[in-house]
Length: 450
Image (tube, rainbow, N blue to C red; front, side, top):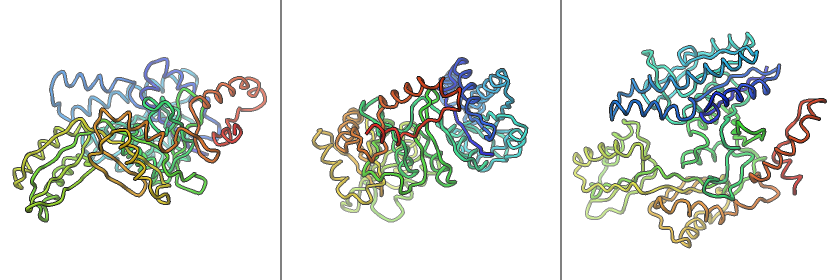
């Protein structure tokens, strides 16, 4: 038996009508030789509603109690989807984190999964039921409910896929797949048919909100193919997989950006061994992720250190930095909450020289000033002013010709996707009478058009 894990986000189960449609979609995708585990998020807007209730009582609600509250969102949508499936005559059972014994490290609001006991899931699957599991949550060693942070439903889905040794994990959302850039900003953005784990991790880490970075990391470590696809379309979406010879090594495959950044700078830090550790260790202990870091040239034994954190962690990072700065004898702390990051990503950078230079020249030509630069083997990231972010994404997308598909590239436009889906719909009734419809791969469709 093949085993597929499907994860549905909040926009997919946002209303009772949508839950009913998801239930029917699940039934349509359930073949006799497939075991199916479905992971659900809270209904769209529910998590924000619950946070609002908590904030109505306290500016800083207790994190344990907040997790207790937020976990109810996923429990409600899992139970409702199981009810919908049963109402359609299908055997189904909803399981919570406690029933699945999904253990976490006990860090409230941003817990990490340690283990999953698959016994309850296996028993349900072997009885012929579809398992509907709560995403976003786990339990610690003390039995407390913990949540995995924003986007944690993706991580739950991949973690279950890894524990169950699934053949594929499908992330079903409100977009057709992974795009070369945010289509809300860049109208010429194209959907990628395939992307490597490494590329997807870099794009996720630099602001792409399609997948949570931890979910991609889990999938890569356990070699679980990820497929990002739309709940509301039959399009095959984007397959995230191990890098191989079949994946075209484009110099740049996508542009990522993030507006939710804060840049902190500590002036006149003593330039001596151990100071960097004294600055960043307390941030790590507070589970604050530091991204771009730069240190200026030392002058008279003093230097400046700048780094970025997410806007959500900005206030906590500032409090820690003020305490540490006083201890180490640093100077003024500058805080810039009007910055963002724009990144180019592609495994082809390994063998294509001059990519970074082209990025810098493109931004300069558009009058966009670069404040900090950081690189990896397959990524270049620039910190710029947030108000220039949209322009930066668009000019870079055009400069690297991501708005133009070549015959060998794994790209397809939204218009081409829509044409394909409509074409399939016209022949669906006729094909269904003979045999189940087979959706052609995107690569074949592009080749045929060319």
